Amino acid sequence: MRSMLSSNLLRSAKCCNAAPCVALLFTALLAVALVSAAKTARSAEPAAITADDALAKLLKGNARFVAGKLHSVSTEELKERRAEVAHGQKPFAVIVSCSDSRVGPEIVFDQGLGDIFVVRTAGEVVDNAALGSIEYAVLHLGTPLIVVLGHERCGAVAAAVADAKEPGHIGDVIKAIQPAVAETKGQPGDPVDNAIRANVGDVVQRLKTSDAVLAERVKRGQLKISGAYISLDTGKVELLGEPSAK
Image (tube, rainbow, N blue to C red; front, side, top):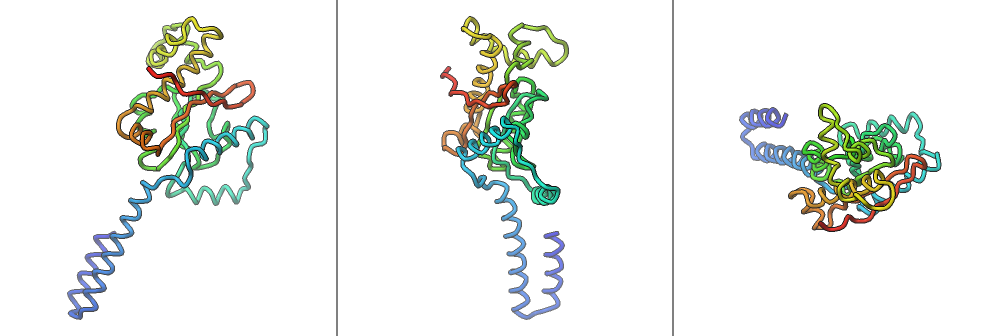
């Protein structure tokens, strides 16, 4: 479209030798360039919320979920929001969670359309595709917060604790969780629950030390990465402490 506009303006300029025509041409081309630059800049703008405020917003939403009082929207509000995000998104948080059907992040954090960027795999295992998805949200959408969410009685972690031999690519998931199993072996308490929490910590640590995109932003204070655990019985999300240095 920009080239078509430029071409039309050039043809018009040929038909007019007056200085105002030339000035009009350059003014129009400058306007097109500014619009294009603005669109590019918007994609890299930081979200209009701090990481701490984003985390507080998630926890408030979870409190509504626990209480069974999810925020409801009218038909008109939903239509307006759909139109609002149809041509662009600005999620305030990335949620890296298990694929388990009982822990859908939009529901357990009571968030709406376009609010959170969700990456889900069994056992919240982060492979290169998942990592690239997370990096996209941080780099191009300006998201300031990543929450890695594990959950009670995770089947993937239970399989890793049992050293289950599964067919296909399920074994890759189990293999990725096994370091957390080794870390917690012999600890008091439930071995599966211990490994679930350790696995969350391992994923958090991996993201924090991941190459340029995430690690640099963490160092500059532009990105916060937190671990969390949700109880299937109560629905409550508990923030987990920082993993110990390795």
